[in-house]
Length: 374
Image 1 (tube, helix red, strand yellow):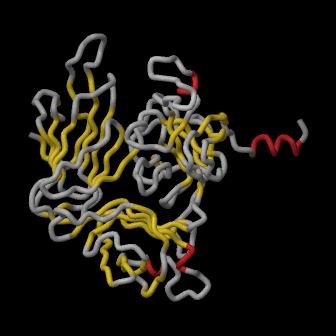
Image 2 (tube, one colour; image 1 turned 90 degrees about the vertical axis):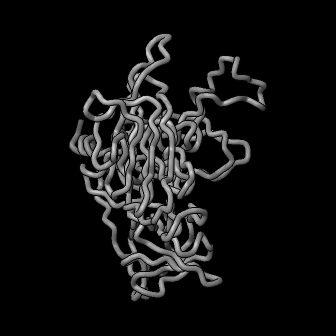
Image 3 (tube, helix red, strand yellow; image 1 turned 30 degrees about the vertical axis):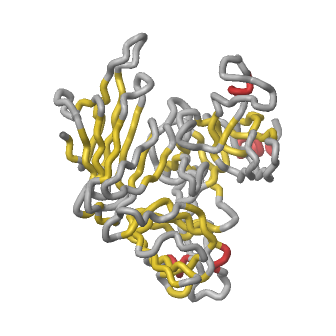
């Protein structure tokens, strides 16, 4: 091997590629995460659940709360929408990939996990559990004014106000990041992604509408405007990226399923149910008049992991998780519930007992900081 070939060999990324079928009619962006569609039916071919159909091991779908335990890989390039589906190439876990990201990264340090949120499904953002669906950044991409990744506010400290025809979002530095004071940067080059949020006084009904929205103006150092009323007087969790949709070279972790990650908004006196497995992040920055609730059902798979983490503080009341079958961190006391109310509160739990015909089991608390256990 000559020097030129050797240099090319050791400098070239170690990609693991596979061709799969995407039956959806939506466009796919480069670096977007996808999951196996393991129960896909064939309405066009007459295949039913009772038929052994090989396409179930070759068909992928946009990540959501039904397929989050079956991460497949990330798209190798942009694909235009096609009405009847199309063959696409993905990079699979255990190799490198250019991954679609929403947050800043540091080489060989930052880990990002694929999202199932409707606002940014398939994009890698908050670090969650390790394994398939989590990526290690092999490239530094800092948040910078006018950059690919410009701004994030994950604690619920950003706020909204509506004066027709514009919604103003206030977050320290967000306007500067999107071009305020710099005539060479056009605010319209950016997209703000709302992961969740609700009214700050008492989040009973006014929950912010999740989604990706075009930035219209940056009228001050700390404000931007969009054209959609996602909810006024809301504390929101968000990040801002360029409309070119940034990617970062990453190593796609292999091994057990991470279960991906979701972001939910607690709602006063309402049940806000989490997905099965993976990591559930909860928005903060709000006051709850009454506890927001959820129930953790028994696990489905031996060794299954489930994590909960609170991104920002909840005032007055808490997010209350009822645990159907659980053991506290001390390893002996029964666990009936967990209450999260402070930024950084988290719990990681592992299910044991789904063995053979056994239908009983228990969630064992592996690690917990902050939540009240009862």
